Length: 186
Image (tube, one colour):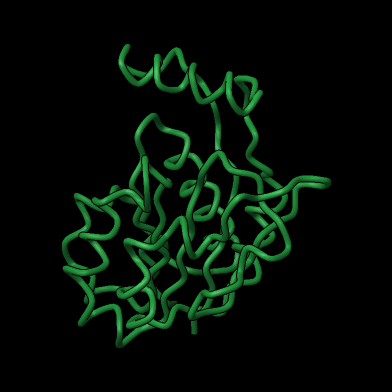
């Protein structure tokens, strides 16, 4: 039975819930799964495959996720890897343009994205390109200002006013689970 690490970086718990759902789907497929914050995942070499993900945070992928991938790059290059990102921006069919790996994006109908996923992950592109993941998925996240520290709540309020976004859970659990069921980790 293959051992799979699902490592994640979360800010307010939303991405941790996505990682848990991915872990559940992989367990249902027969994998032995460990779901862990990236900061606590040390023995990467002990796993046969790794799924890693984190939120888009400020102007790129969360620095802690980028650091995890860079720190464990030698181990990750020698095993199957799949990556996922969560964020608040709408997803479109063209989001995969410019990415060095297959990209899974569920589309939000009738939306326009100001930038591609590659632009949002610019700070991580060198390590993504080096790892050549089997898949990279983008999923919308959850907007819950109540769990944020007051300065972040103020920034989120401004972003929500400008973008006309409402608080709520934008995660598509069917898409998340379908992606996990389709991963090739052998």
